[in-house]
Image 1 (cartoon, rainbow, N blue to C red):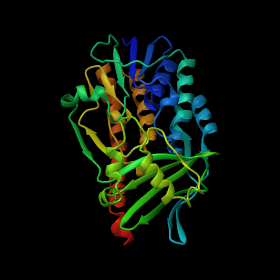
Image 2 (cartoon, helix red, strand yellow):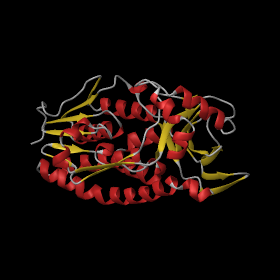
Image 3 (spheres, one colour):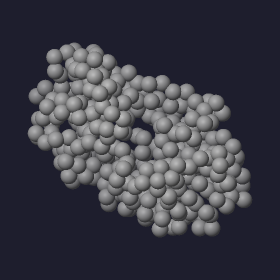
Length: 345
């Protein structure tokens, strides 16, 4: 019988899975290990949640769902802005929340039911004595890397580069906008996530990466530091969208999307959730949604099945079809944005 569960990674999936398991079975010993020291160190700015995800949270844990909704920014539409005009892509169905705010809610909710959350600790699944280990340590999961062959890992890198920034005000609506400088093209994906905050994600193609000198900026930025040269350039290019205000940064530098697929989401007594198990392109804003829905399904499976292998099989059977559907949609979205220069010519 499962007595001790250890969770590696204190992101949304890890904290929420821990909360749900302890909520359903108070006698369980549930521990979350997070290598960073606190929510203030988290990467990113705002994250998106859909109404379908909120319904799933409400069914699994009404108290936490109410706290997440109360702290979220809702009601904005989504627009594709062109020169002098904008196309409304859909109406006011969006919901967003600051990542640090979400982690604060989920962390306190986990602790409230008796979960032990240990910050600043690097966990090693090879030395654990837990009955079940949940790997929620993200797209660069050290746990997954150790089990890569057993899990059947396949990855590929996206063609575009992207960078996460923020702004100290709420934009009127979520929007996409392309700005050119000579032959370089910069596309911003922006959305509000609080009354005084917005996410500004900017992506560029390979031509822009070279011609705008972004590759040199990146090369000259020390590990763990913000690429200040790129930030200054983006502030100049998007000064209208920013109303002349600066971008907010948090170890902000260029990256490439990692498309991750696993043949199996578990090995032995270890199950993977969220970005440790699968990724979907950021243009659909689905990473946190999928991670929290994984947490719900895995917690339900562990509570409902008599053995750990049966629980893991039930979890994957429930979650793989919707995740694969989202990945297909996300790949179409990624392909569309990867060729945006051609579409806008």
